[in-house]
Amino acid sequence: MKYINGKRRIRIVFYGLAILCITLVYWIISHIIDNVMILPKIKIILSYLLSIEKSDFINHIASTMIKVLISYMISTILALLLAIIAHYKKLYLMINPYMSILKTIPTISIILILFIWFGNEQSIYFIPIIVIIPILYETFHYHLKNIDHKLVDVTKVYQFNVSMKVRYLFFYPLLEAFMLSLKQTFGLCFKIIVMAEVIGQAKNGIGAKIQNEKINLTMEGVFAWTIILISIVLVIDFIIDFSTRKAVKWKCNHEN
Amino acid sequence: MKIKLSKSNQNNIIFKDFEMDIKDYHVNIVMGPSGCGKTTLLNCIARLSKYKGYIDNHHQSIGYVFQEDRLFPYLTVMNNLKIIEKNNQKIKTFMKQFQVYDLKDQYPHHLSGGEKQRISIIRAFIRQNDLVLMDEAFKSLDYHLKWQLVELIAKIQKEMKQTLILVTHDIEIALYLGHYIHVLTKKTTQLKESISNPYIHQELNENSVILRNKLKYLLTH
Image (cartoon, one colour):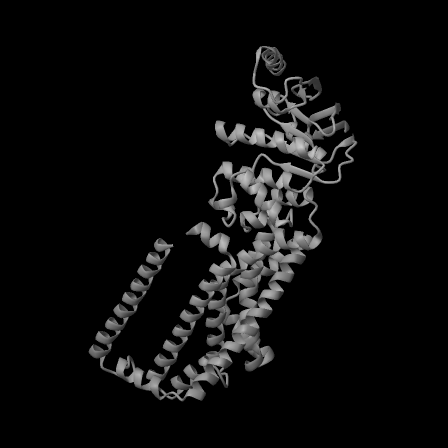
């Protein structure tokens, strides 16, 4: 336990050092350039951050977060359903090519096509779904395909009922797969939503604010909202790490 | 339990009209050269492998100690046992008997091969199974622990009166634990000889040495 705490402490120290370094580099470069339109000084960004109204701040963040959560939930459910269908009905031969195609389509093409088809506001929900489904599908399908047949024998010998089989053969491995891919895919979903908000000129959301500040040529606003975005992603990463440690204890214990 | 089966695997015939009589409520040892189909035989009895013929297996519940531990990696030791037997007190007693109670909150990854094998043995015995199959269950254990467990299993089997089929290469274990010892031939597998063991639960003595030598001969010729 002491060892893990020590390891975590070292990680925090290095995290702090990295932030300090980049702040210092930014501070130096912004003073050399000395142009608010290119690289606003830290002091200006901070004063912008402090000037953001609380209700405005919460509104935009909540708007983006809701979009992320809805898209991510739909992506997960669809990917899981597709993986189950692919596995049990042997339809993977048909589904896999679609997933490969979805994976290779550039995100920007998806964004533009969906904007044309469904309009800007609605499309924002679909874009991350299309990008994330193939990743989650692959993860789920791989884990379903690689269910340990030795454990299947155990469930047969000890006459597990259906709910026990689902729980002990499928639920835990899929939970493990999901939790381990959550950090990567959730972060990706967040970034795509913000990008779609920027390109689609959404009314609300972090992306909408960034786009708005860009149009108004308020570079400190763009930087400030980017910092807010990074902070949110870091907090979410921390929450995901914490939840993963709790949800897949066996894996984390094993790795530690 | 009467067995009469044939089984082939792709181009190999494993069993052809193989017949064997397993004595209920006794310890039946199955011995034979490597690759002769001992594990396949256990899998057929456990209804894990398909075969032609019949196994007159009237046993309702089966416990199986596989060659590998086959514990659920995402469950603690305690939960691995809880999914088989709900009675906590019984689990506790068994774990203490097998000296693994301190490991109850550990995940299988943290256990040594011997510890995992002991949990696997507990899992097979804890639910009053009618039939227990053991496939080289003592392979990964050191000498001292192996004999501790052999004695413990002899005691449990005596109390529970289960039918036990144990596959082993260890003649000493076979002589100590087995009421009946069945020796199989090499491919295509047939029953070479079934021997009733009068020296069960006894240390090796002048008389049992003769039986041991006979077994050695049967296994090598």
